Image (cartoon, helix red, strand yellow):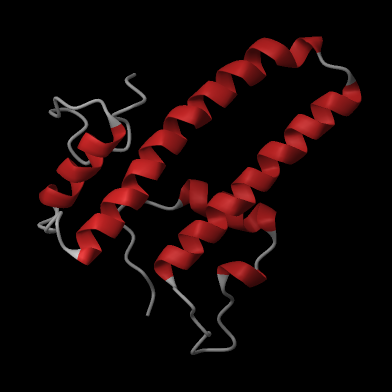
Length: 134
């Protein structure tokens, strides 16, 4: 699996492997002008996500290679650090979907009010074709 193209909407056909080139290709794929304010911001964010995905795979490999050599306190530290990264990713997703949102329906929980375990499971199980609930 090519981790650099894993997130690309054109992952099976793209010729690009550099994060910024993939992000520009992604913007164009969705009809976004890469030179507009929206396009440049989208490209910067997508570039960061492509790089983050590669670093996530790097961290996974380091974890697999080094976990057996760690004592219990270091294993717990590694787990907690990765768990907090999961929270940060979930918060970014919430910000992307609901920027500065105040719940219009107070009975509907937001991602900020859900326990991390429920939030992480819902993100993992979220189908790619899901439409936001309005």
